[in-house]
Image (cartoon, one colour):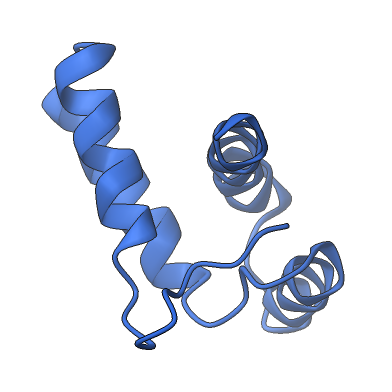
Length: 86
C-alpha cells in the first residue's frame, strides 16, 4: 500500500509525488522543502503504516518535538492518500 520502491529497487515515488505537487498543485518552494525534509526523515520507513509508526516512536525517543512529528505526519498522510488513489 505504501511502497516507495519500484521493482528495480529505486526510490522515485516520493520524487514523483513532489513533482506532481509542484506542477499540478502549484505549491510553494517552502512546501517543496518541507516535503523533501519529511521524506529524508522517513527514508526507509514508508513501506507500511507499521514502519511509519515505528519511525514516529523512534523520533519521539530521540527527543524530536511532537510539533515537528505532527507536521511530517501531515505530509506522509498526503503522500499516502495520493498513492492509494493511483
